[in-house]
Length: 437
Image (tube, rainbow, N blue to C red):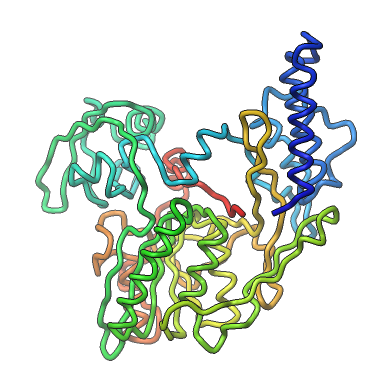
């Protein structure tokens, strides 16, 4: 992509290098630091989607570093119809950290936790290849003790975050669904994420539902798309009539993978129709692009159900929005999706990548701007007390009921976690939220 953007970045490198030996001081930092900051601002003034809103007196040198600059420009993102700035996404990251994250290479326990209620912390997600996955820990297990503490409450979140996510070694006691307990000590390791957490098939009367839990659009794209090919081939062989895509913790990733998944799901009759339009600022309007659907595989269904939460973001929302004009799309979950109809790409500056929001996306009916998220059709709690694929898990049960009966029914499943719990849970979130070209 983007020859001009490459020239801008390389120019920044040239300036940065040429001044290394010439000066020793600067405003709020060394000369090297200030030139890095000035380069970041220059690039943002060029490629930021709302670049004309950045004031002429904005001083990048007054901020500590790239991350703070990216966060600071977010306030200059006013959109018609929204009272507050809409950019909650622009960020910066060290190149080596991004290279690992984007390739799905993670170093931790592979354990994600969330409060089911104030005093009920559950395993929300386990990475199969991680230390937690190899230890046999499952979604739905209840934390009884963390690092020797039985204070497993929303009032002790910082302690829990540090010991579940940031520790190199932590001892846990869990309660399994059969009420038995197990003590497990985990050691942090580096492992490869697998975005396809589960795929299965359910029979509901005369209908068959194919279910896939898809947790990220990052990773080895060829490997991920190959796995998706195998999943949808199984769905075709089983003659599924409906598909359920579980994106409840999918914070986004590569647009190319979102496009591929959309092409697996789209009905054959819509192949060749507009999938999406991507628009840049006026400096790069010649890069505006219309993408058409190109059907992959032989799946031919009209009904697509998405399980979502407010962690469902960016490339996940792009997928949902792009299919809406052509399919019968239904969303279930506790609340609307995250709200990110824009994207970015990594721009290298020194040791950093910066990600200023650079393009917006609309679907085949020119619908986008869902900065407040995409609303659910049926509100239902996230069934953290059940493992993936359990028919009694609240969200899955609600969708299967609809497939079998043609309507949503409560059945006692739709009481949603209180907003207070959701607020405390924010600190426990570990989901990338991006649509990356």
